[in-house]
Length: 197
Image 1 (cartoon, one colour):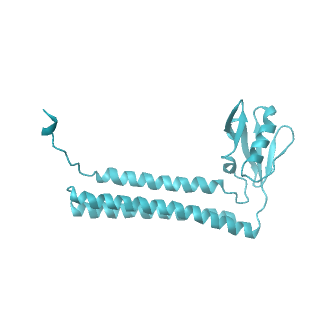
Image 2: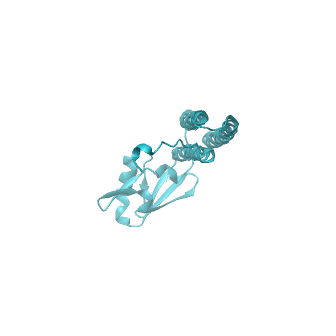
């Protein structure tokens, strides 16, 4: 069979697969928001604020949790116990060089980070910062909905029935609403955490 005789096949859109892909992208936006909110210090000890800290270890920069045990013994303290005590200085330096903004103290065995109580003004700034991040995530969810809506509209030209397209759009809207609600709940919980003295 020569190449000229092969006719291009127009493939019909797989609605279920398209909606599943949309939901996956929306889930990624929710995970992004959750991760970003965890990094914001709200006056409570949370080991996630150290997730971006990289420590010099045997000539490589590695995540802090690969060279030490990180825990929260109480609501205002993060304790870091290096597996190798010789690394205390390297861990302290990594924390100081990061954007954590807390000066570490050590007793020769354990490094402690005292989490300061944020001021009222700082709390409001944190809420604004969180809301900005949440808005970014919501925009992503809305963009996914718009992309998929476009795909569904184009699929009508490729043979998708208008009824199927309408059903798919309704399903897409339900998924969109579910994720917007999830994002709202995440941001509400974080804002409550920040504003609770």
